[in-house]
Image (cartoon, rainbow, N blue to C red):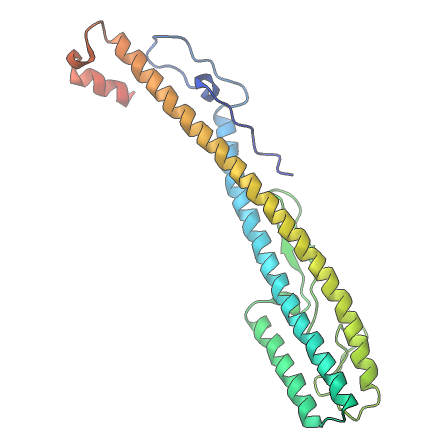
Length: 246
């Protein structure tokens, strides 16, 4: 899915760095691991991190909406039991108002899915975003036929149509929550893939760092050999410093 990650290369020649000392074997650049390849690896790491954050935020939205949906199911079932037992209007009001506050609090904290708004998730670097469809879980003064919960926020226990509205809401809610749960499972699986991809990029970067260290050691050794046959201890300090400045 992620096409910008380049496979790592090992060995001194993989970095394509020229030897500034003119001694020893020439280091030929490798076409698939030049400076541009290094840039692409760095960009891929950052892009994957951004994608993982987008997926994480989308999952957080969906998990909160699922929790509120569970509360909605519980509230509707309790209302059904209340009607069967001849419960009071005050008890019904308590159930309805408590759930309404639960939804309002979640929305005020940024859970737009519960307000019926869609959430965009960037699941792949450079690809079109995915959409998590919102599920409007708010209680309305006058709910319409397209609402998930068609029980009004001030529903009356003596309304003969209330049992039908309760059952209709439970069925619609079950379908909406099932679709949302499928989305969460897909995002969780995708998050695992992204973690593996990030680890792969980190491994490539570690290989590059190791190659750089080996190349520097080779260059220093070749430079010291070019300083003359005298032992390293007798080399002028400025000559050694010049090697590292190069």
